[in-house]
Length: 357
Image (cartoon, one colour):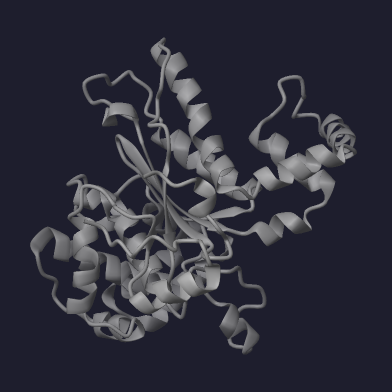
């Protein structure tokens, strides 16, 4: 039985959600090799995700845009929206939905437009709520593309399946496994031979960002891929000015006086980008070849995870070999599920942890 979204998405339960949307009839609507002149909307989606990440109180930690579906890993940051001024709320909203009559290239006109709209307290409150709502985030991603695609194809009708699937991520191990699954989607589909070669994925974005900053910085990634933990840490520092959520959460080190002067909230504490690259590579070879050699650095990566290669493979094997993900939330241990049930009352009360089939 389908559950109302309000029972599935609650930032008090978890701030992380894995969202999945498919094209209607799972047709290859993003790109069709038999119709090379047809627009490929995957770059549009990547650009739109960056725009939404910049303006919503929702941050993107990972994504993968495939031929007939997409994955987005979202973090809810509702407290950010609560701190915005009325003017900032209106400016962010018109950045996502530009009014047709507004001359956006004239800053004076835009400023006056924002000031006028900001006087409507009820409208500001409504849009503030929308800018921190996961449903509106996905609507703002999917609906404009549906209109553009139908216009380009000269047709009408549904572009997407009616609902997006959201899976609540309840613990750090589940978050890491989900991120790995999303970034390895192109490899699992046989489209690439290495994770970072997968276009329109978050791992491709992260690697490209590091490599484009400076030619010298590329040398930092190479030893990171070979297992140098020091190089992994150095490479992770370059994520701070990227639009995606930094992979490593360095705020604890910052508070202890060991980190940079200003760190954004990341995904996982004490787990830098270089270590994640090593883990992705090893996991990809597990999927592709059925095994993975313990290269330099991997032992320390698994020690950081308090896990082993065998345990990690067991966690990710079902996900990578699954045709679809089941369940409304994902946790790697029953203790987490029990704590969530106790703390949230009716939320998830009738559900049990359902790992991917």
